[in-house]
Image (cartoon, rainbow, N blue to C red; front, side, top):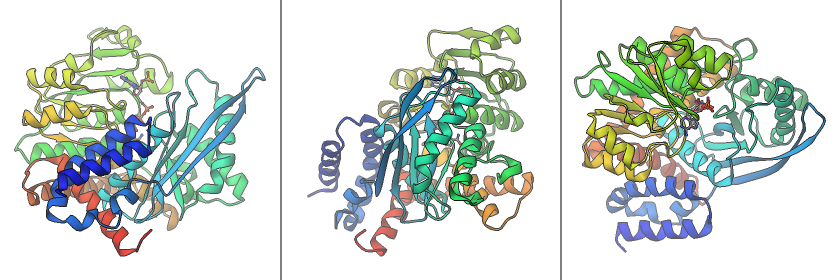
Length: 447
Ligand code: NDP
């Protein structure tokens, strides 16, 4: 059977085995689009049910999370941990607390994480988890009780050499603190390496909080450099206003670009003078308020509740909010308005149609598994510091992050060139990451 037909048969099998999980199908399908080229040259990767094994998580844990609110009412949420693949190292990947979390979303995130981690070149497997819990509008005490209950089940599945969770949407240093505290009580050990994204005074790493956003900016800087361009004078749009978005904005400004628009789940703001990061931080980080208040704090800004942030003309577009936030219509608008580079800070924020449109229009497009790997890279640096009971300076850690992002960029473009598609970051990332995982799986026998 020809490679394309084999890949399609594998894909149909995966859709049938994982019914009702569209995000997972989407992530698998994106990988398979690239694999066709690899299978033409190296058909052995399709033998021994290797691809089917790769697409089946090693373990999936689903559990009840009961907790009590401040008024004494009892609630029940559903917790998840999908341990996708540990062939390269302990499972590693964040926890997401959001009302829309379900098994399919956790599986898509775990699948992406596996290949992202492989692309970093670090000894990490892939996993992801979370709960359909919404921290928004909850008191600190409620969030603490939820996190403690969540960890009361999760702790038996994780550990520094087994599975190392971190943060993601809805899980920041506050939630990590409550979970780490409960893990410490339950295991009677200060297992720093059991979770990353910790606070600095209790085992965290410098730059971890900033890492995904900084890493994205470093990656884009490599993309620009490869085209004899620079951030200087570029207008940039960053969607979202959470951890990834805020630190992307900070680093882009430091590197000479101007972020003129960003968004949250209520709408978007445009500020041609450049987003005032301190005002945005106060609003979103300290006060956890809606972005529309930014326009009342900063007179040069305007707020829009309708339309799309991608309607704003820019040179560089960095989707940093959530999955499938940038569709084909938005892609067409961006290209019409002259966008020159697109790179994903979020996980799978671009729909397949939009991604294909950027490719057909010749726009350099970096997928999240390459461009947003800075978070997991710095989590690995946190694990190294925990294991050696060490603490590195901000500059040292930041320099390592920048180097690792440069290496990922090189891996992507090198592989894309080797497979006859220079500049195709999606193809380069997918093939380089897949080969790393697949070769290790072949070496370790039928597992
Ligand atoms: P946060 O929860 O800190 O922030 C998410 C932001 O996106 C919030 O500002 C939220 O708005 C906004 N948002 C949500 N939905 C929409 C939407 N439809 N349109 C516009 N804005 C929206 O999450 P993170 O910044 O940590 O994560 C963002 C993305 O990056 C996710 O895909 C995550 O998986 C990925 N990622 C995160 C890493 C990390 O280290 N944190 C590492 C690698 C990837 P509101 O404030 O209104 O809720």
